[in-house]
Image (tube, rainbow, N blue to C red; front, top):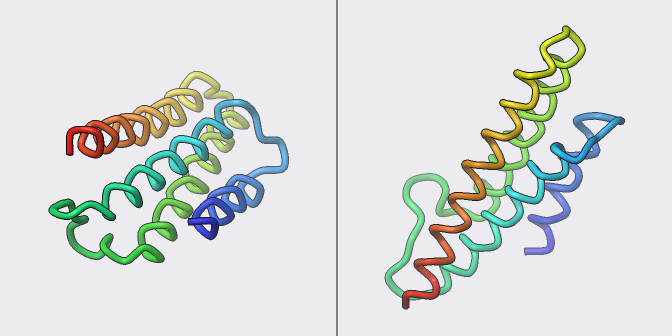
Length: 110
């Protein structure tokens, strides 16, 4: 689990030298989703489908997506599309935040 946090933080640091609050939100939402997925997978009857069953693959995919979202948002910002830059990051936070909420409801419902 510590490795997942390190990878997600490195994704933030590698993607941009000028991280802002929304970038941190993207990384924290991804980390929260990974934490809740990890906790959920420890319960009997809950499982992850497909290739994401492997923790290393799951963390790697989240790190790549986080770096891509942050990189794309900064590209949009540099080309004068500040509004779309925020939309991209808010969308990632919303998706991962929603996944965290659903996972936590499943964990607490057991």
